[in-house]
Figure 1 (cartoon, rainbow, N blue to C red):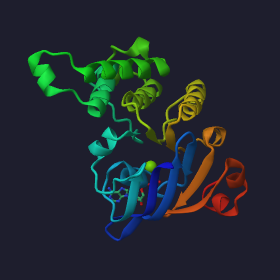
Figure 2: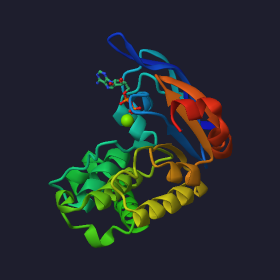
Figure 3: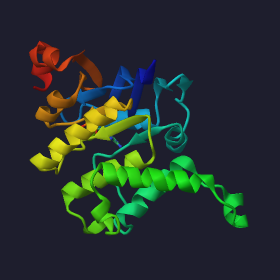
Figure 4: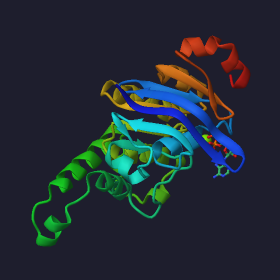
Length: 246
Ligand code: ADP
Ligand code: MG
């Protein structure tokens, strides 16, 4: 079964159909890429999938219809995303940024806290934060305020924050922008490892070497619609994909 599925999704801004009837399936265990020119509607589609307004169509997370569920409810069901513009809290340390994300996912038991009882959510939060720091080699930066870190490291913090929520579905909006070659290669390896662990990954990215080096399936979006889909090899040779983007 697909982990995340859009069916006929439409999102309008005034008279503009930024997302114009998109069908998209994001399966578990693979990297699905979404490419296309600026203004194609990729980020708006992400918003629709993650909990923003949808004017028509349905969004399913696993077996569940989540079309009317707000972002924080979808997050608690295992959906995590990153933003095209880095959105970590600059005044918080790296570890605290991750903790906020993990607590949003697992919650913490208010009665346990008030009574000073052991809180099972706290252990899960701590484990998830440590695992995400370790996975992206950020442990040495754990206590640094995020706002003091260079752009490339911040991108990794943004990804680590999404992972700290232990998602089953991960939406990444241009995660390689601002990364140098070594960081991009690290990102590529981690995305393959996360897919091998069973995550469903949807990747919006302009770095075509990364897209064609990491994705199992590529969807091409233009003017609000998916105009081509296939394996990286198929998309490289696809006339429509070349015309609108490549
Ligand atoms: P992409 O991520 O593919 O570059 P976007 O989803 O950001 O594209 O934008 C798709 C279209 O929707 C563009 O024409 C953009 O100007 C428009 N758009 C995006 N967000 C808004 C908004 N909040 N209000 C009005 N128009 C918007
Ligand atoms: Mg965008």
